[in-house]
Image 1: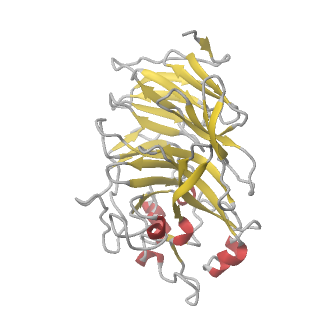
Image 2: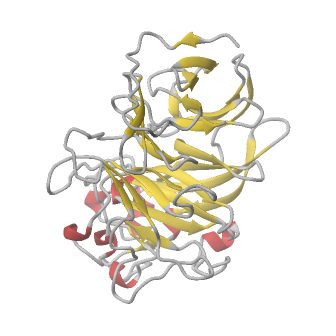
Image 3: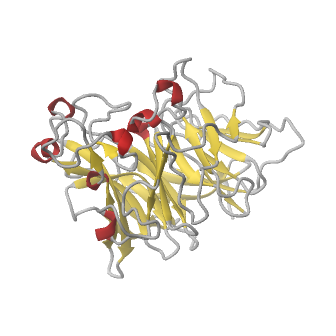
Length: 411
């Protein structure tokens, strides 16, 4: 196959230890471009995938060699960072063989998608909650934006043979609220007494009057546990929900394998968000790209997340965190009385010692590879680099422009 280099980007490789980079190809969609690139570890282009739309934001390589790509397209709400609007399957010849746009409710797809083993696709969407509905749920008036509230929802879309898709499962944040401002309104209670539910007035890194409340930026699936992992940027938390529920059960508090319905199975990173900690207990800061480490990989079953680090008390710097959730034998999670979900700390962190020169204020990601290395994306700078378990850099590529994250497809 003919190779061609990608533009005139600065390319540098650092083999500073005996460790080698994991072989494979690298897939990425620059945030300001309509092209998705598949590149080998030497910086040679293997394939490109052209779209009408800029990235919105992620792409995945399918078994048939096509990419499933989120694109940025205008919708019924004017989305902010990470806006999507359309998901397409595209061949390397630029043919769009399938696409989906959200029409079932007023909202907009954004950030990430996840292909399930059955071929269905999990997608994140903003759902427009109007001002009247928000106030009736206990949202304070100054926390309702001029365009209402955009509450995140996760939908599972089954592809239809004639094109487009059908929502076959849905989980809504708006079904799992708690509020302590008005006893006459629904879901009244203390967040600390209801840690599986979401404080409708917690803003985290958001602002009063900001429509984009949660800003969920990644979705991952664990087939063994039948669970969905979310990175919720504005809460500086990761959340896990039960996918074994029906849509009806996902709207309630009972049902599913773990019998909590659609309430949160697990949350971690910022216990202040549910009243079981303060700022000293916060570990995650506007993080991205939470994912389970796959079976057979070093750290299998743990969760890896890119901790952007904006807003730390000791200054802004980024880290990659690997944590082992405290689980029960049935795959659920231990919730201590009056204390936050564990663990208190992580099992691996890069860099081990904080480095203020390593800071990505937004986007970015991390992927555990089969040889135990970790592929890291400094998204704003467009720098991809791979480190071994000791933090030694073994590979680097500098694209020079913003990229949500790169994905290594191993040989």
